[in-house]
Length: 324
Image (cartoon, one colour):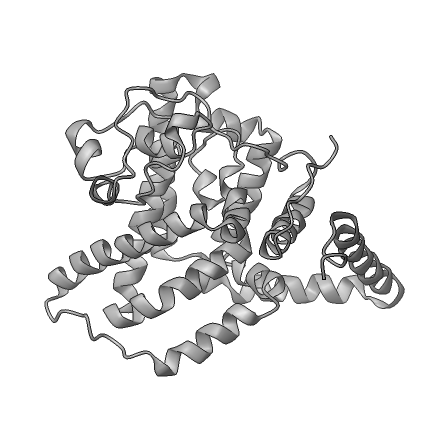
């Protein structure tokens, strides 16, 4: 097993399969058929793509983009970076497009070999639904926001502490600059793992689909704000209640004293309660991750490298640092 999972052999297998698939496509494939099928799929997704909630989310992102320009200056703004994308921002743009077009499920299906979907279907009939729910709609919405964020806090902790999952989550932390769409930068395998981890608590909490959709939109807008370089710490609110842009930027810091701090997604008080809050005065001016292998080749290379490194970690092997 150790030989099979060696660095070179794993890469050779992945590359060989892709080459064989490519050759087979050129030999037997029909480009027009693939194009027509792809266009039909996208057209069939119009109702899912062009929704009111997507519009609200994009308006929120646009507001952050506009606010940044006078506060940060044009060269430091997200809009400038999106118009002059680095290799890191190109990855963000691809991930953002996948999210907006609602086609992330295809990547999840491919990279998990359908196992995530199978796991969710197996869990669904055996989980009691709504046993932790409330009848009052407003109380239910507040409860869902707090309870789901509590679950996400602990999932986030595990993403960092468990080496296997860290290799997936590291894809998100490999961003070398912040812009408002960096929040979309997640590997499909990481997204699948989160979905499976949240399946049980979400079912127990109950709630309606529109409530979860509203929370998802609000969370995405907040995440866009916290993945900007805006110099906002929200004062006492950012120290005790909500995650601020500076608070989350610290979570992405490469400065050792700021490692494993500020795991909260929406609420910062989880970090206060569980001792992971960064209370220092130092504010990092850059974001990155140690031993960053991403953003150097292509999004396809990055997408394949991420789960490969997860598999190596699963079997106790440390991936080699690829040559520049």
